[in-house]
Each structure stands twice: as C-alpha cells, then as structure tokens.
Amino acid sequence: MPEGGVAGLATPRVALIRQETARNAAIAATDNRERSFDSGAASGVLPAVDGVHNVSHAHRIAKRRTDMLRIETTILINRPEEEVWNHVVDQEKAPNWAVGVRDIRFITDPPLRLGSKCSWTQTFLGHDIDAIHEVMEYVPYKVVTFKADSGPFPITYRYTFEPIGNGTKLIMVVEGEPGGFFKLTTPLLTNMAKRTMYHSLENLKDLVEAEALVHA
Image (cartoon, rainbow, N blue to C red; front, side, top):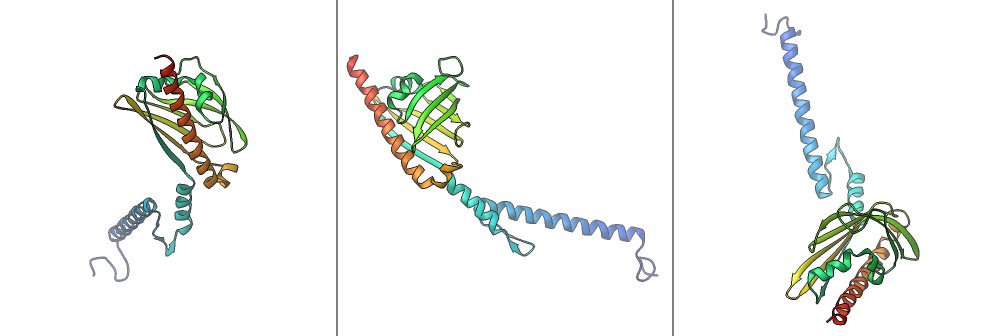
C-alpha cells in the first residue's frame, strides 16, 4: 500500500500537510504582492495586481502631490534676530506688514506662545478669509510655526530665523493642500502666494530696519 494510504486517497495526516503547504504558499504570495505594491506606491508606479495595473491609484498619488502647495521665501533683514522675531510674533503688528491681513484677534490669552490661538481675517484673490491659527512650534529667536485648519484649506506658515553677521536671514515656508475653489486655481494660487509672501517680507524688512533708525 502506498505511504499516503489507499491509491488516489490521502490519509488525514497527508491531507493536513498539503493544506498547510498550500496555506503557507498563499501567505508568501500575498506578502510578495504587498511589498511590491508598497514599493510601487512610493515611486508612483504600481505593480500589476491579478494581471491589471493599478494605474488609477498611481494617478491619484501623483495628482495629490501636484495639488500640494509649498512655497519658500527668504530675505535678509539688517537687524538682530531678536528684533525680527519680536515683530513676527507680535500679532498686533502683523497687519502693518503681512499683505492682505486686516485684523488679528487673540482667542487665547496673550502673549503668543506654544498652543496660542488667534483669529485672522485676510483678503486673498478677492475673497475674505477667516481662519484660526494655532502655534504649533515656538522656539524663541529660532522658529515659530502657525497652522490653520479652519479656513478654505489646511495651511501652515513656518518662520525660521538665522543670524547672519549683524543681520538675520528669515525663511518663510508656506505649505497646504488647496481645496474647493482654490483647488481649481492652484497655479494662479501659487503665483499669487509667492508675490504675497515676497511683498510681505519686504514690508517686514522695511518696518524693522526703519524702527531701528528711529530709535538709534
């Protein structure tokens, strides 16, 4: 009699071994597909799944990256970082240099610190925007980050201060993912935001350096 029992039939032990082997093979195949899928998602090119390329998912990933907004602007202000910092974090002074900002009101008690919340009213692309900004990062004279989730789309403003000789290099980075009306005008939005950031930092530079001359 064959080792497996009656010819054409399998003993319970042999059947169990076959089932275990088939299950392990299926698990290994699934793991391989998942690793291939994850690798493809990271590069934007996804592998074939059951003979069909997941082009639509790759397209969605690429499109989301394209819709993301990130703008960086740098300016050199000929004053120490303490003075530049004090102007940036003083919310009452923001309408004097930040283009489009009409009003800022504290929701939490001043002064500005980690976790502080302020209500901003500003005009952009002909629209009045009301948003609540929260301080997400606050390292005196080094970096301050504001995040707004309540406006037309989530957006983050990050200011980094670096001493350069007797002056300060101020780096402003804006990141967001436009939605609604603004998603339809992303290229225009990007160009307008660049100009707004540039003129805002130019205004800040003029304000800080002029005040230093007045008090000299």
